[in-house]
Image (tube, rainbow, N blue to C red):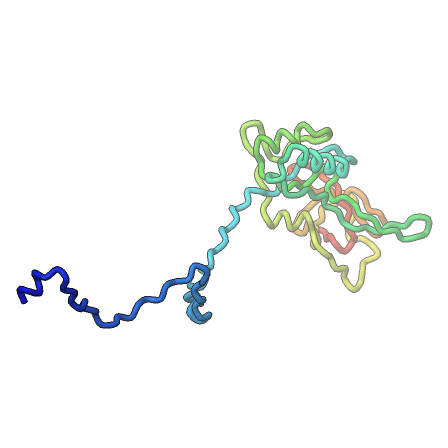
Length: 236
């Protein structure tokens, strides 16, 4: 053994380890095959949570009565609506109503139906009462004041019952319409149906050709003359 180590010409057989499987070399141009489609399905997501919509803020608009120049109710209404748009006050404005009722008159031997104002010289305004709305109304030609208001006190809004009464609704006539009144001029009468049901007033005129009576009622603290059919009023 020593001689073999000291002999430089000795060439022992090299030790060859057993075959070890080699990893295949990756080709630069090769691409990994995609995973099967079922492996790529995303996990089920949670159902969306319903979010409740916020409730709208309560409305601060109320109904008021506004004194205006008689005979100009329609033009004043249009002027106010135009100014509301120009000044961008839609959030404080609801609507303006001119209460009317249908009446039938005889003209040249023909019956003609038309709308008659229930409160000449007044408007019903649904608004949020504040300084900007008050200034807009007062600066509109032909507009007076909000009924019931003073310099130091805002006007009281109308109740829903008052609104329903003033705007009115359909009124049915009785089966037999009286042809003669049961009252005379100057008598006290009570309105039995319609917008002014329950109100009392004084007979100012009897219009026999139309079967109507003109009664003076106290509305908004002021006398207002309103026409009624005979059957719509009764003596007090």
